[in-house]
Length: 543
Image 1 (cartoon, rainbow, N blue to C red):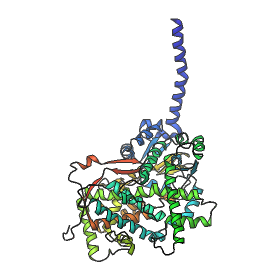
Image 2: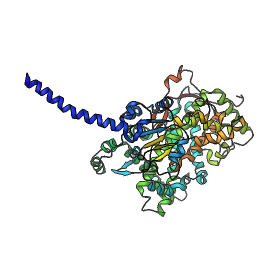
Image 3: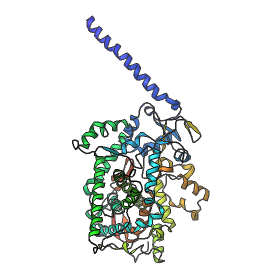
Image 4: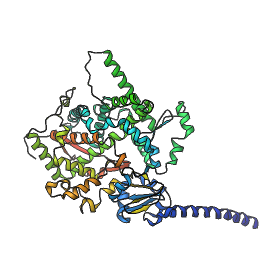
Protein backbone atom coordinates (compact mmCIF):
# COMPACT_ATOMS: atom_id res chain seq x y z
CA UNK A 1 0.00 0.00 0.00
CA UNK A 2 2.73 2.43 0.99
CA UNK A 3 4.67 1.39 -2.12
CA UNK A 4 1.65 2.23 -4.29
CA UNK A 5 1.24 5.61 -2.60
CA UNK A 6 4.93 6.24 -3.11
CA UNK A 7 4.52 5.61 -6.86
CA UNK A 8 1.60 8.01 -7.06
CA UNK A 9 3.53 10.65 -5.12
CA UNK A 10 6.52 10.39 -7.44
CA UNK A 11 4.23 10.89 -10.44
CA UNK A 12 2.80 14.03 -8.87
CA UNK A 13 6.31 15.25 -8.12
CA UNK A 14 7.18 14.91 -11.82
CA UNK A 15 4.13 16.98 -12.72
CA UNK A 16 5.23 19.90 -10.56
CA UNK A 17 8.20 21.04 -12.69
CA UNK A 18 6.27 20.38 -15.92
CA UNK A 19 3.39 22.49 -14.67
CA UNK A 20 5.79 25.21 -13.56
CA UNK A 21 7.45 25.25 -17.00
CA UNK A 22 4.05 25.50 -18.69
CA UNK A 23 2.97 28.37 -16.44
CA UNK A 24 6.24 30.24 -17.05
CA UNK A 25 5.90 29.71 -20.82
CA UNK A 26 2.29 30.94 -20.90
CA UNK A 27 3.18 33.92 -18.72
CA UNK A 28 6.02 34.81 -21.09
CA UNK A 29 3.67 34.53 -24.05
CA UNK A 30 1.04 36.74 -22.46
CA UNK A 31 3.34 39.44 -21.09
CA UNK A 32 6.15 39.51 -23.67
CA UNK A 33 7.18 42.98 -24.85
CA UNK A 34 4.38 44.51 -22.81
CA UNK A 35 1.85 43.55 -25.49
CA UNK A 36 -0.58 42.49 -22.76
CA UNK A 37 -1.75 46.13 -22.68
CA UNK A 38 -3.58 45.48 -25.95
CA UNK A 39 -6.94 43.76 -25.71
CA UNK A 40 -8.02 40.71 -27.64
CA UNK A 41 -9.27 37.16 -27.12
CA UNK A 42 -7.57 35.77 -24.01
CA UNK A 43 -6.42 32.54 -25.68
CA UNK A 44 -4.86 34.57 -28.49
CA UNK A 45 -2.47 36.12 -25.97
CA UNK A 46 -1.21 32.65 -25.00
CA UNK A 47 -0.83 30.76 -28.27
CA UNK A 48 -0.76 31.11 -32.05
CA UNK A 49 -3.13 28.17 -32.18
CA UNK A 50 -6.10 30.48 -31.45
CA UNK A 51 -5.75 32.11 -34.85
CA UNK A 52 -4.71 28.83 -36.50
CA UNK A 53 -8.06 27.34 -35.50
CA UNK A 54 -9.88 30.51 -36.52
CA UNK A 55 -8.27 30.51 -39.98
CA UNK A 56 -8.98 26.78 -40.32
CA UNK A 57 -12.70 27.58 -39.99
CA UNK A 58 -12.41 29.65 -43.23
CA UNK A 59 -14.28 32.62 -41.77
CA UNK A 60 -11.45 34.75 -40.34
CA UNK A 61 -12.62 37.92 -42.12
CA UNK A 62 -15.80 37.81 -40.05
CA UNK A 63 -13.86 37.10 -36.85
CA UNK A 64 -11.57 40.08 -37.43
CA UNK A 65 -14.52 42.42 -37.90
CA UNK A 66 -16.13 41.16 -34.70
CA UNK A 67 -13.04 41.42 -32.51
CA UNK A 68 -12.25 44.93 -33.78
CA UNK A 69 -15.83 45.98 -33.04
CA UNK A 70 -15.39 44.58 -29.53
CA UNK A 71 -11.82 45.63 -28.67
CA UNK A 72 -11.13 48.68 -30.83
CA UNK A 73 -8.58 49.71 -33.45
CA UNK A 74 -5.68 47.65 -32.05
CA UNK A 75 -6.31 43.98 -31.27
CA UNK A 76 -3.87 41.32 -30.11
CA UNK A 77 -4.57 38.23 -32.21
CA UNK A 78 -1.53 36.13 -31.16
CA UNK A 79 1.19 36.44 -28.50
CA UNK A 80 3.36 38.47 -30.90
CA UNK A 81 0.79 39.72 -33.43
CA UNK A 82 -1.23 42.95 -33.45
CA UNK A 83 -4.04 43.72 -35.89
CA UNK A 84 -4.63 47.39 -36.71
CA UNK A 85 -8.12 48.38 -37.81
CA UNK A 86 -7.76 52.10 -38.53
CA UNK A 87 -6.85 53.24 -42.08
CA UNK A 88 -4.14 55.52 -40.63
CA UNK A 89 -2.10 52.38 -39.94
CA UNK A 90 -1.72 51.69 -43.67
CA UNK A 91 0.89 54.39 -44.28
CA UNK A 92 2.60 53.67 -40.94
CA UNK A 93 3.07 49.97 -41.69
CA UNK A 94 3.26 49.72 -45.48
CA UNK A 95 4.77 53.09 -46.38
CA UNK A 96 8.03 53.23 -48.31
CA UNK A 97 11.35 52.94 -46.46
CA UNK A 98 9.77 52.14 -43.10
CA UNK A 99 12.12 49.23 -42.36
CA UNK A 100 9.41 46.57 -42.02
CA UNK A 101 9.82 43.09 -43.51
CA UNK A 102 7.32 40.37 -44.28
CA UNK A 103 6.64 37.74 -41.61
CA UNK A 104 7.34 34.01 -41.74
CA UNK A 105 3.78 33.49 -42.99
CA UNK A 106 4.94 34.19 -46.54
CA UNK A 107 7.66 31.51 -46.51
CA UNK A 108 4.91 28.92 -46.65
CA UNK A 109 3.82 30.25 -50.06
CA UNK A 110 7.21 29.79 -51.72
CA UNK A 111 6.80 27.15 -54.42
CA UNK A 112 8.94 24.08 -55.06
CA UNK A 113 10.45 22.71 -58.26
CA UNK A 114 12.18 19.34 -57.92
CA UNK A 115 12.87 20.07 -54.28
CA UNK A 116 14.23 23.57 -54.87
CA UNK A 117 12.49 26.47 -53.12
CA UNK A 118 11.45 29.21 -55.55
CA UNK A 119 10.67 32.61 -54.08
CA UNK A 120 8.57 35.13 -55.98
CA UNK A 121 7.41 38.69 -55.42
CA UNK A 122 4.73 37.55 -52.99
CA UNK A 123 6.61 34.95 -50.97
CA UNK A 124 10.05 36.52 -50.54
CA UNK A 125 10.83 38.21 -47.23
CA UNK A 126 14.02 39.82 -48.54
CA UNK A 127 13.40 43.45 -49.43
CA UNK A 128 16.59 43.55 -51.53
CA UNK A 129 15.56 40.47 -53.52
CA UNK A 130 12.04 41.81 -53.94
CA UNK A 131 13.30 45.17 -55.17
CA UNK A 132 15.62 43.60 -57.74
CA UNK A 133 13.04 41.09 -58.98
CA UNK A 134 10.39 43.78 -59.24
CA UNK A 135 12.75 46.03 -61.22
CA UNK A 136 13.45 43.11 -63.55
CA UNK A 137 9.79 42.48 -64.41
CA UNK A 138 8.12 45.80 -63.64
CA UNK A 139 7.92 46.88 -67.27
CA UNK A 140 5.70 43.87 -68.00
CA UNK A 141 3.08 45.21 -65.57
CA UNK A 142 3.46 48.95 -66.14
CA UNK A 143 0.45 51.09 -67.01
CA UNK A 144 2.22 52.15 -70.20
CA UNK A 145 2.24 48.54 -71.47
CA UNK A 146 -1.31 47.75 -70.36
CA UNK A 147 -2.88 48.38 -73.77
CA UNK A 148 -0.48 45.86 -75.34
CA UNK A 149 -2.40 43.13 -73.52
CA UNK A 150 -5.87 44.44 -74.33
CA UNK A 151 -6.28 42.48 -77.60
CA UNK A 152 -5.54 39.29 -75.65
CA UNK A 153 -8.14 40.17 -73.00
CA UNK A 154 -10.59 41.06 -75.80
CA UNK A 155 -10.14 37.66 -77.42
CA UNK A 156 -10.91 35.84 -74.16
CA UNK A 157 -13.83 38.13 -73.32
CA UNK A 158 -15.47 37.74 -76.71
CA UNK A 159 -15.15 33.96 -76.55
CA UNK A 160 -16.51 33.99 -73.00
CA UNK A 161 -19.61 35.86 -74.21
CA UNK A 162 -20.14 33.31 -76.94
CA UNK A 163 -19.80 30.32 -74.60
CA UNK A 164 -22.06 31.99 -72.02
CA UNK A 165 -24.78 32.28 -74.64
CA UNK A 166 -24.29 28.70 -75.84
CA UNK A 167 -24.34 27.15 -72.38
CA UNK A 168 -26.77 29.24 -70.37
CA UNK A 169 -29.10 31.34 -72.56
CA UNK A 170 -32.35 29.57 -73.35
CA UNK A 171 -31.03 26.23 -72.10
CA UNK A 172 -32.85 26.18 -68.78
CA UNK A 173 -29.53 25.78 -66.96
CA UNK A 174 -28.54 27.89 -64.00
CA UNK A 175 -25.00 29.24 -64.17
CA UNK A 176 -22.69 28.62 -61.22
CA UNK A 177 -21.35 32.11 -61.72
CA UNK A 178 -18.64 32.04 -59.05
CA UNK A 179 -17.04 29.10 -60.88
CA UNK A 180 -17.81 30.30 -64.42
CA UNK A 181 -16.20 33.68 -63.88
CA UNK A 182 -13.13 31.97 -62.40
CA UNK A 183 -12.82 29.88 -65.57
CA UNK A 184 -12.80 33.15 -67.51
CA UNK A 185 -10.12 34.66 -65.25
CA UNK A 186 -7.90 31.58 -65.66
CA UNK A 187 -8.23 31.72 -69.44
CA UNK A 188 -7.27 35.40 -69.44
CA UNK A 189 -4.19 34.67 -67.32
CA UNK A 190 -3.19 31.94 -69.76
CA UNK A 191 -3.70 34.28 -72.72
CA UNK A 192 -1.69 37.19 -71.36
CA UNK A 193 1.03 34.97 -69.86
CA UNK A 194 1.59 32.48 -72.70
CA UNK A 195 -0.74 33.69 -75.50
CA UNK A 196 -2.68 30.50 -74.87
CA UNK A 197 -6.29 30.31 -73.78
CA UNK A 198 -6.13 27.42 -71.33
CA UNK A 199 -9.48 25.84 -72.19
CA UNK A 200 -11.45 26.39 -68.96
CA UNK A 201 -14.26 28.26 -70.72
CA UNK A 202 -14.26 25.97 -73.74
CA UNK A 203 -14.61 22.84 -71.64
CA UNK A 204 -16.55 24.44 -68.76
CA UNK A 205 -14.37 22.48 -66.36
CA UNK A 206 -11.21 22.62 -64.27
CA UNK A 207 -8.36 21.87 -66.69
CA UNK A 208 -5.79 19.49 -65.18
CA UNK A 209 -7.51 20.09 -61.81
CA UNK A 210 -5.35 23.19 -61.45
CA UNK A 211 -8.04 25.21 -59.65
CA UNK A 212 -8.48 22.39 -57.13
CA UNK A 213 -4.69 22.24 -56.78
CA UNK A 214 -4.43 25.98 -56.16
CA UNK A 215 -7.25 25.70 -53.60
CA UNK A 216 -5.40 22.89 -51.83
CA UNK A 217 -2.21 24.97 -51.79
CA UNK A 218 -4.02 27.97 -50.32
CA UNK A 219 -5.98 25.90 -47.80
CA UNK A 220 -2.70 24.49 -46.54
CA UNK A 221 -0.76 27.76 -46.63
CA UNK A 222 -3.25 29.90 -44.77
CA UNK A 223 -3.55 27.47 -41.85
CA UNK A 224 0.09 26.37 -41.57
CA UNK A 225 1.17 29.98 -42.11
CA UNK A 226 -0.14 30.79 -38.62
CA UNK A 227 2.69 28.56 -37.31
CA UNK A 228 5.18 28.74 -40.21
CA UNK A 229 7.65 26.31 -38.64
CA UNK A 230 5.16 23.54 -39.41
CA UNK A 231 5.88 24.01 -43.11
CA UNK A 232 9.50 23.03 -42.49
CA UNK A 233 8.18 19.68 -41.28
CA UNK A 234 5.32 19.04 -43.70
CA UNK A 235 6.49 20.38 -47.08
CA UNK A 236 9.91 22.04 -47.01
CA UNK A 237 11.54 19.40 -44.84
CA UNK A 238 15.13 19.12 -46.21
CA UNK A 239 14.99 15.30 -46.29
CA UNK A 240 11.64 15.32 -48.07
CA UNK A 241 12.91 17.92 -50.56
CA UNK A 242 15.95 15.74 -51.27
CA UNK A 243 13.73 12.74 -52.00
CA UNK A 244 11.43 14.89 -54.13
CA UNK A 245 14.39 16.17 -56.17
CA UNK A 246 15.26 12.56 -57.02
CA UNK A 247 11.68 11.61 -57.83
CA UNK A 248 11.38 9.41 -54.74
CA UNK A 249 8.63 11.46 -53.07
CA UNK A 250 5.28 12.61 -54.51
CA UNK A 251 5.22 16.25 -55.58
CA UNK A 252 3.47 18.66 -53.21
CA UNK A 253 0.54 20.78 -54.50
CA UNK A 254 2.75 23.81 -55.05
CA UNK A 255 5.08 21.66 -57.18
CA UNK A 256 2.07 20.70 -59.30
CA UNK A 257 1.39 24.41 -59.88
CA UNK A 258 4.98 24.93 -61.01
CA UNK A 259 4.72 21.90 -63.30
CA UNK A 260 1.56 23.35 -64.84
CA UNK A 261 3.41 26.61 -65.53
CA UNK A 262 6.39 24.71 -66.96
CA UNK A 263 4.14 22.75 -69.32
CA UNK A 264 2.64 25.99 -70.65
CA UNK A 265 6.13 27.43 -71.14
CA UNK A 266 7.22 24.38 -73.14
CA UNK A 267 4.10 24.68 -75.29
CA UNK A 268 4.85 28.38 -75.80
CA UNK A 269 8.41 27.57 -76.88
CA UNK A 270 7.15 24.94 -79.34
CA UNK A 271 4.68 27.39 -80.87
CA UNK A 272 7.43 29.99 -81.24
CA UNK A 273 9.59 27.40 -83.03
CA UNK A 274 6.69 26.38 -85.27
CA UNK A 275 6.11 30.02 -86.16
CA UNK A 276 9.70 30.31 -87.28
CA UNK A 277 9.47 27.14 -89.36
CA UNK A 278 6.05 27.86 -90.88
CA UNK A 279 6.29 31.38 -92.21
CA UNK A 280 2.96 31.20 -93.99
CA UNK A 281 0.93 30.14 -90.97
CA UNK A 282 -1.32 32.79 -89.42
CA UNK A 283 -1.49 32.62 -85.64
CA UNK A 284 -2.88 34.89 -82.99
CA UNK A 285 0.08 36.84 -81.73
CA UNK A 286 0.70 39.45 -79.12
CA UNK A 287 3.20 40.45 -76.52
CA UNK A 288 2.70 38.33 -73.40
CA UNK A 289 4.20 38.17 -69.92
CA UNK A 290 6.55 35.30 -70.69
CA UNK A 291 8.00 37.10 -73.70
CA UNK A 292 8.66 40.18 -71.57
CA UNK A 293 10.22 38.09 -68.79
CA UNK A 294 12.53 36.46 -71.34
CA UNK A 295 13.52 39.88 -72.67
CA UNK A 296 14.47 40.89 -69.13
CA UNK A 297 16.38 37.63 -68.70
CA UNK A 298 18.68 38.62 -71.57
CA UNK A 299 19.81 41.62 -69.51
CA UNK A 300 20.50 39.70 -66.28
CA UNK A 301 20.49 35.92 -66.92
CA UNK A 302 22.41 35.22 -63.71
CA UNK A 303 19.58 36.70 -61.62
CA UNK A 304 16.41 36.15 -63.63
CA UNK A 305 16.90 32.40 -64.00
CA UNK A 306 14.51 29.97 -65.66
CA UNK A 307 13.31 28.86 -62.21
CA UNK A 308 12.49 32.44 -61.22
CA UNK A 309 10.61 33.04 -64.46
CA UNK A 310 8.66 29.85 -63.80
CA UNK A 311 7.98 31.08 -60.26
CA UNK A 312 6.62 34.36 -61.64
CA UNK A 313 4.32 32.49 -64.02
CA UNK A 314 3.16 30.18 -61.21
CA UNK A 315 2.37 33.16 -58.98
CA UNK A 316 0.29 34.67 -61.79
CA UNK A 317 -1.76 31.47 -61.89
CA UNK A 318 -2.37 31.62 -58.14
CA UNK A 319 -2.99 35.33 -57.58
CA UNK A 320 -3.91 36.67 -61.01
CA UNK A 321 -6.98 34.53 -61.48
CA UNK A 322 -8.34 34.46 -57.93
CA UNK A 323 -8.32 38.19 -57.22
CA UNK A 324 -10.00 39.11 -60.52
CA UNK A 325 -12.60 36.34 -60.27
CA UNK A 326 -13.49 37.39 -56.72
CA UNK A 327 -13.86 41.04 -57.73
CA UNK A 328 -16.05 40.25 -60.73
CA UNK A 329 -18.21 37.87 -58.73
CA UNK A 330 -18.61 40.50 -55.99
CA UNK A 331 -19.80 43.16 -58.44
CA UNK A 332 -22.50 40.90 -59.89
CA UNK A 333 -23.55 39.72 -56.43
CA UNK A 334 -24.08 43.26 -55.16
CA UNK A 335 -25.88 44.27 -58.36
CA UNK A 336 -28.36 41.44 -57.84
CA UNK A 337 -28.77 42.34 -54.18
CA UNK A 338 -29.42 45.99 -55.10
CA UNK A 339 -31.79 46.24 -58.11
CA UNK A 340 -31.71 50.04 -57.92
CA UNK A 341 -27.96 50.03 -58.50
CA UNK A 342 -28.26 47.42 -61.28
CA UNK A 343 -30.92 49.55 -63.01
CA UNK A 344 -28.87 52.74 -62.81
CA UNK A 345 -25.70 51.07 -64.09
CA UNK A 346 -27.65 49.53 -66.97
CA UNK A 347 -28.96 52.98 -67.85
CA UNK A 348 -25.45 54.45 -67.88
CA UNK A 349 -24.17 51.69 -70.16
CA UNK A 350 -27.15 52.06 -72.52
CA UNK A 351 -26.78 55.83 -72.71
CA UNK A 352 -23.08 55.57 -73.53
CA UNK A 353 -23.83 52.86 -76.08
CA UNK A 354 -26.47 54.99 -77.80
CA UNK A 355 -24.04 57.92 -77.85
CA UNK A 356 -21.52 55.72 -79.67
CA UNK A 357 -18.80 55.95 -77.03
CA UNK A 358 -18.56 52.19 -76.41
CA UNK A 359 -17.21 51.10 -79.79
CA UNK A 360 -15.21 47.87 -79.95
CA UNK A 361 -11.64 48.28 -78.81
CA UNK A 362 -9.95 46.41 -81.64
CA UNK A 363 -10.63 43.92 -84.45
CA UNK A 364 -9.63 41.15 -82.05
CA UNK A 365 -12.66 41.92 -79.89
CA UNK A 366 -14.52 39.79 -82.40
CA UNK A 367 -13.09 36.39 -81.66
CA UNK A 368 -11.48 34.42 -84.46
CA UNK A 369 -13.62 31.40 -83.57
CA UNK A 370 -16.79 33.30 -84.35
CA UNK A 371 -17.59 34.77 -80.97
CA UNK A 372 -20.39 37.30 -80.84
CA UNK A 373 -20.41 40.82 -79.54
CA UNK A 374 -18.04 43.71 -79.24
CA UNK A 375 -15.81 44.16 -76.23
CA UNK A 376 -15.85 47.60 -74.64
CA UNK A 377 -12.43 49.32 -74.62
CA UNK A 378 -10.76 49.98 -71.31
CA UNK A 379 -10.47 53.69 -72.09
CA UNK A 380 -14.22 53.91 -72.75
CA UNK A 381 -15.18 51.92 -69.64
CA UNK A 382 -12.97 54.18 -67.54
CA UNK A 383 -15.15 57.15 -68.50
CA UNK A 384 -18.32 55.67 -66.97
CA UNK A 385 -18.55 57.31 -63.52
CA UNK A 386 -21.27 55.09 -62.08
CA UNK A 387 -19.45 51.95 -63.25
CA UNK A 388 -16.37 53.22 -61.43
CA UNK A 389 -18.43 53.84 -58.29
CA UNK A 390 -20.01 50.36 -58.46
CA UNK A 391 -16.65 48.63 -58.87
CA UNK A 392 -14.95 50.67 -56.14
CA UNK A 393 -17.80 50.04 -53.71
CA UNK A 394 -17.63 46.32 -54.49
CA UNK A 395 -13.89 46.38 -53.78
CA UNK A 396 -14.72 48.06 -50.47
CA UNK A 397 -17.42 45.62 -49.42
CA UNK A 398 -15.66 42.49 -50.63
CA UNK A 399 -11.86 42.88 -50.88
CA UNK A 400 -10.20 39.81 -52.35
CA UNK A 401 -7.87 39.14 -49.39
CA UNK A 402 -9.39 38.36 -46.00
CA UNK A 403 -6.36 37.97 -43.70
CA UNK A 404 -3.71 40.27 -42.28
CA UNK A 405 -0.98 41.37 -44.66
CA UNK A 406 1.68 40.69 -42.04
CA UNK A 407 4.81 42.75 -41.49
CA UNK A 408 7.51 42.63 -38.80
CA UNK A 409 8.47 45.87 -37.06
CA UNK A 410 12.15 46.91 -37.41
CA UNK A 411 14.54 46.10 -34.51
CA UNK A 412 14.27 49.60 -33.05
CA UNK A 413 10.48 49.37 -32.96
CA UNK A 414 7.98 51.62 -34.72
CA UNK A 415 5.14 54.02 -34.05
CA UNK A 416 1.79 52.95 -35.52
CA UNK A 417 -1.32 55.08 -35.05
CA UNK A 418 0.53 56.96 -32.31
CA UNK A 419 1.42 53.75 -30.41
CA UNK A 420 5.01 52.58 -29.97
CA UNK A 421 5.30 48.90 -30.95
CA UNK A 422 8.49 47.00 -29.95
CA UNK A 423 10.82 45.61 -32.61
CA UNK A 424 10.20 42.12 -33.94
CA UNK A 425 6.42 42.36 -33.46
CA UNK A 426 4.19 41.08 -36.26
CA UNK A 427 1.66 43.74 -37.26
CA UNK A 428 -0.78 44.20 -40.11
CA UNK A 429 -4.11 45.36 -41.46
CA UNK A 430 -7.07 43.37 -42.77
CA UNK A 431 -8.98 45.04 -45.62
CA UNK A 432 -12.25 43.55 -44.36
CA UNK A 433 -11.80 45.65 -41.21
CA UNK A 434 -10.23 48.76 -42.76
CA UNK A 435 -12.98 49.11 -45.37
CA UNK A 436 -15.70 49.15 -42.70
CA UNK A 437 -14.28 52.12 -40.78
CA UNK A 438 -17.20 54.50 -40.18
CA UNK A 439 -14.99 57.48 -39.42
CA UNK A 440 -13.60 57.32 -42.96
CA UNK A 441 -16.39 55.74 -45.03
CA UNK A 442 -19.37 57.16 -43.18
CA UNK A 443 -21.94 55.90 -40.66
CA UNK A 444 -23.41 53.57 -43.30
CA UNK A 445 -20.06 51.89 -44.00
CA UNK A 446 -21.71 48.48 -43.71
CA UNK A 447 -24.16 49.34 -46.52
CA UNK A 448 -23.48 48.88 -50.24
CA UNK A 449 -23.94 52.39 -51.65
CA UNK A 450 -21.89 53.32 -54.76
CA UNK A 451 -23.08 56.93 -54.58
CA UNK A 452 -20.63 57.56 -51.72
CA UNK A 453 -17.91 57.68 -54.42
CA UNK A 454 -19.62 60.29 -56.62
CA UNK A 455 -18.79 63.94 -56.10
CA UNK A 456 -21.79 64.75 -58.29
CA UNK A 457 -23.98 63.07 -55.65
CA UNK A 458 -22.71 65.38 -52.93
CA UNK A 459 -19.66 63.43 -51.80
CA UNK A 460 -17.26 65.76 -50.01
CA UNK A 461 -14.01 66.02 -52.05
CA UNK A 462 -11.84 65.87 -48.92
CA UNK A 463 -13.63 62.77 -47.61
CA UNK A 464 -13.54 61.24 -51.09
CA UNK A 465 -9.77 61.66 -51.19
CA UNK A 466 -9.42 60.13 -47.73
CA UNK A 467 -11.62 57.19 -48.69
CA UNK A 468 -9.56 56.46 -51.79
CA UNK A 469 -6.35 56.62 -49.75
CA UNK A 470 -7.87 54.12 -47.31
CA UNK A 471 -8.72 51.49 -49.92
CA UNK A 472 -6.57 48.45 -49.25
CA UNK A 473 -7.81 45.80 -51.69
CA UNK A 474 -4.47 45.64 -53.52
CA UNK A 475 -2.26 46.21 -50.48
CA UNK A 476 -0.01 49.26 -50.19
CA UNK A 477 3.56 50.47 -50.52
CA UNK A 478 6.34 48.65 -52.36
CA UNK A 479 4.48 45.34 -51.98
CA UNK A 480 1.31 46.56 -53.71
CA UNK A 481 -0.10 43.84 -55.98
CA UNK A 482 1.98 44.10 -59.15
CA UNK A 483 -0.90 42.80 -61.28
CA UNK A 484 -3.46 45.40 -60.15
CA UNK A 485 -3.51 47.17 -63.54
CA UNK A 486 -4.30 43.94 -65.39
CA UNK A 487 -7.00 43.03 -62.86
CA UNK A 488 -8.58 46.48 -63.15
CA UNK A 489 -8.57 46.30 -66.94
CA UNK A 490 -10.32 42.91 -66.92
CA UNK A 491 -12.89 44.12 -64.41
CA UNK A 492 -13.69 47.45 -66.05
CA UNK A 493 -14.03 45.83 -69.49
CA UNK A 494 -15.96 42.71 -68.53
CA UNK A 495 -18.77 44.23 -66.47
CA UNK A 496 -20.21 46.73 -69.00
CA UNK A 497 -19.53 44.34 -71.90
CA UNK A 498 -21.44 41.54 -70.16
CA UNK A 499 -24.32 43.75 -69.01
CA UNK A 500 -24.73 45.29 -72.44
CA UNK A 501 -25.43 41.83 -73.86
CA UNK A 502 -27.01 39.83 -71.02
CA UNK A 503 -29.59 40.08 -68.26
CA UNK A 504 -28.58 38.43 -65.00
CA UNK A 505 -30.94 37.28 -62.25
CA UNK A 506 -31.32 34.89 -59.34
CA UNK A 507 -32.76 31.56 -60.58
CA UNK A 508 -36.42 31.21 -59.61
CA UNK A 509 -35.89 27.54 -58.77
CA UNK A 510 -33.62 28.55 -55.91
CA UNK A 511 -36.19 29.54 -53.29
CA UNK A 512 -33.64 30.69 -50.74
CA UNK A 513 -30.41 31.38 -52.67
CA UNK A 514 -28.78 33.17 -49.73
CA UNK A 515 -28.89 29.96 -47.72
CA UNK A 516 -26.89 28.15 -50.38
CA UNK A 517 -24.17 30.77 -50.77
CA UNK A 518 -21.27 31.16 -48.39
CA UNK A 519 -17.86 32.82 -48.20
CA UNK A 520 -14.71 30.74 -47.89
CA UNK A 521 -11.59 32.50 -46.65
CA UNK A 522 -8.32 30.81 -47.57
CA UNK A 523 -6.39 34.10 -47.83
CA UNK A 524 -8.58 34.93 -50.84
CA UNK A 525 -12.26 35.18 -49.90
CA UNK A 526 -14.33 33.29 -52.48
CA UNK A 527 -18.10 33.41 -52.74
CA UNK A 528 -19.24 29.82 -53.21
CA UNK A 529 -22.45 28.46 -54.77
CA UNK A 530 -23.33 31.79 -56.39
CA UNK A 531 -25.86 30.68 -59.02
CA UNK A 532 -27.50 33.01 -61.53
CA UNK A 533 -29.85 32.86 -64.50
CA UNK A 534 -28.56 34.48 -67.70
CA UNK A 535 -30.64 35.69 -70.64
CA UNK A 536 -30.14 37.92 -73.64
CA UNK A 537 -31.21 41.51 -73.14
CA UNK A 538 -34.31 42.68 -74.94
CA UNK A 539 -32.98 45.79 -76.61
CA UNK A 540 -36.50 46.96 -77.29
CA UNK A 541 -37.21 47.35 -73.58
CA UNK A 542 -35.85 50.14 -71.42
CA UNK A 543 -34.79 49.29 -67.89
